[in-house]
Length: 241
Image (tube, rainbow, N blue to C red; front, top):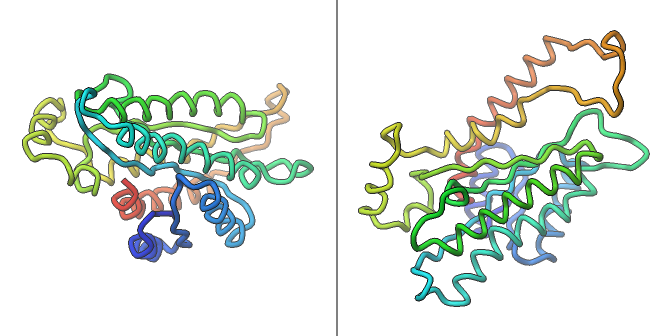
């Protein structure tokens, strides 16, 4: 688990029994150390979630170069650096194909789909993350790596939204058909959803009789484990966003 704040990273990792690897995802050298910590802990990587993000809101004519650059560096460059560094662990040894598909989930935002005033930098970076997701989904399919994105709307209870004016939060909430903002638990469930899918993809077509039978007991066990992980993700979600 990664966070820029070492104390927050340690706290969140301890809450879910993970390895803490604090560092700056905008620094390729730091990313290499973060991924290296994952390699030392487990030797491979089954799931990668890119959730780092910051905001520097301002009307475009008042937005500085640094405001634009810093958001892109965290949201888009950070995901690029992490994905690039993590590929060898996700792919595994070339001579030993993985038994199941590895998973990458990139956390984008609903503003990447419809825009929002005063967030041109954040909107553009999150839209770029969707483009990165689509390209990697095609590029990494041959390595048996699934790449997906989720695009949450307004999420309360995070450091990111805590910086927003209360009037803005209320105005956005009033436009949500459900009548409430999302929660970190909602995001955790959305992130966990692509991890729960167990459809097998064969490298080449074959008769149905040749396919390996599914083991219902194992499937239920994995589902229960992933749901348990999703329930424990909010701490990480709150810290990373």
